[in-house]
Length: 269
Image (cartoon, rainbow, N blue to C red; front, top):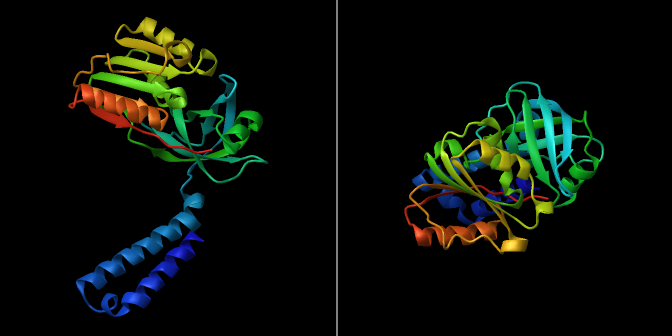
């Protein structure tokens, strides 16, 4: 349908401006180039991407329910998967009862052929994962995406996570048992029953003096605010609900215009 809409759109433009666009001119050349590129891109996405783009085949080898609505999936892939800590990837699940369309999931760790995703139940597809996903189910993964990578920031960083937004940070923590930078980490959640990886975070803070863990339970302490916090000239990495991240970004910039902000987010159900 999208492909046909694009073709009809081009046809409509040609009907209106055909004489100008089909003549040998700079405008006609630009129109022709972008029209062809658009047609090729649409053709690839619609007809080829899901067949040739998902080159990492594998199966589910572990399922862990972290709380009442969050699942950690462990999978074994056909060949080593390269990613930067903090990225996400598209996953297809070939199990009866699951739609075959790919969905983006945050990577929560893994090395070589082992990969972890952590998924919060927030809609039909993610509820299906929590309730019905089975060990042994076949899967396919696209490459990693995203720019919220902690490794490329400064050696002094502030990390801010809200709810399931903690997942990208877990991938870094798991693969760096000895923290190689100074980090102040704010993790905001609504009641400990809704938090994940608390034991891992507390143990990590005990083992790394340069990991300053700030747990904020909004049920007990109210919403996370940085208005009274010192914000130095360092990288600030954020992941969580968009309204929360926007509010905190304003507070950070109000405190220090030089602070470098990085945010990665997507929403799906």
